[in-house]
Image (cartoon, rainbow, N blue to C red):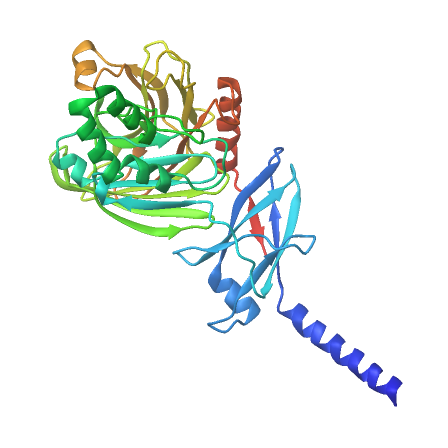
Length: 413
């Protein structure tokens, strides 16, 4: 009898195992390029996962790699399951999605709105940080048109909230104001101790934006004239980690070629493990096709640049705010999934140079924007005090990134 009971139990376990296996969704990721893809984010519609696994509304899922180990994932605001995949050159990799209790994942990509710092919107991942300027800055007539960036090294954890907390610490700021009256040297030392413009071992803000396109902002063009966007009007954080940060920014109306009330909307997302953000741009109330340019501000007329329209990327080696080299070099760039009409260096005439806060020009990638469409590109930065040390290494990264966004991973299940 005991043997029979054991046999019955084994059969029941086998049946249960078969039932569980039917609730597994196999995801095959294929890499069509002769480049290894490491940690690249894969997207699967949550609706397909629910339908395939016949999930209840409250059911949890896990994502497993080929070894059965859990892989971090996130369900995004637009109802996609995203997870990092690693696929060999011209290879495939298999992942499994099934019901289960997910492990706790570290938050890698995240951001925050800072009304206390003139409406900054700042975000980061394990490699880099960025910010867009808001309406309070514009109300003060400070001309910060483009994206700013924060360098980052020696950590993969979020640092921006701590940097802002120190920079804006009200007690320390009050102390600085007091010391300026009695001990300017001590005031300067305390200011330096709390400033995010100083590297305290994890990174800093040492990038100059001013009234330019900064680190990869896009703008419409009337002939050869850039129609500069100002600060965002409204912001809405859509995703806040652990693997993707997404924000929607809407801008004040512009008058473009006589079209009044042209409103720009940007959806910007940053994934874990990437130096580049994805930007999806659209313009409402625009009546005709116009050039749209993505730009990198130049702080040297003869700086190290790359403008490769055919292969879809532009780069620049920025000298940072410390021209002596104490802050190293910042690599900035943009990559384009669609064909670029033109890529070039455009230097300012002396009058415009003064209007642009002393900047020397831009590296521009110019495309065409059709009313009602979306303009998608990728932009970002790296720092030579972190992993990417040379312009050659940065250009290789950007060249490969452009190849990847033009030849994405394919997903089947």
